[in-house]
Length: 107
Image (tube, rainbow, N blue to C red; front, top):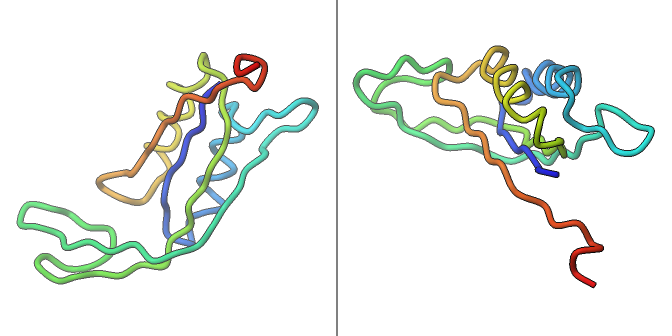
């Protein structure tokens, strides 16, 4: 099992979260679309050559973002990452993938 994390402007969070669940992330027992989100502020400075969805070249931008976390079966990861890339508004999309350890492996 893996965990996929992405950061997205708050206004786009529901669209990204729904797409991730529709692609197979967030399956937990008899539940689908299970996720956890936290809000924070993302900061970046677009450089020359960038085509920022938000902000201007050379100026520090601060965006209220939502961190979306969903578990995902290994065989669904490529599909979930592809759908994130398709619906996410950013030019450079932050995606983190973590390997999870089954608690039974620790005993």
